[in-house]
Image 1 (tube, rainbow, N blue to C red):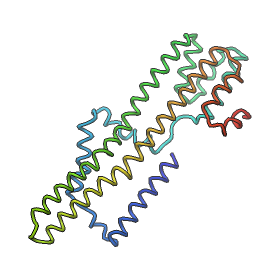
Image 2 (spheres, rainbow, N blue to C red):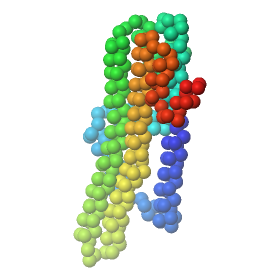
Image 3 (cartoon, rainbow, N blue to C red):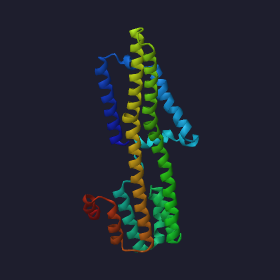
Image 4 (cartoon, helix red, strand yellow):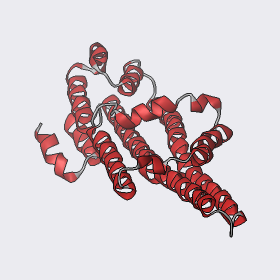
Length: 258
């Protein structure tokens, strides 16, 4: 579980709920608008189906899970693992790493090491692993795209509902004031739905997924450099120094000491 995602989500929900309660003096039902809900929420779902393929839409639960839960090995831990593997390969030969493969949880690192142990050319290993990174990046883009579409179409559809509400209000000018007030409420509430959807949910979640994707790409680039260094038989200290470039300077001293 990603603590930052959980804390941020709870704070955002609490802030929105508190402001809604104070703004309506406890009458939260005054914020409910069936027309606004249909136009903004149902309309946004329709826009998603119109914009994305069904295969990508089926992956939506995975996008949410990726937002809430961290996956993969931390960068510092990955560097430590590769450094220990480099020492073992330098001391006992690269074939000795075959017994270590079952202990490694990172599948990307395991696949790369298998190819290195099997004696596959470094160029082939690098090309294969980079193709895997490219495919992963495309999958991650779909997750980001889903929330970007909500961020774009939510406020836009809220504006559509607002315009419709204003048309109804103008149509009743000089008529029943209650009807005019109701149509104005529809317009304002629909705009609120779209704004909340974009800025309190879709935008932050999409940005977190983009950050996670960039973090994983960097981690996998680190793994590629480590595997190529091991296969080339470089000094373990040189391998560690090379991989230390992937972490912030404040973490390098503790990494090398470990």
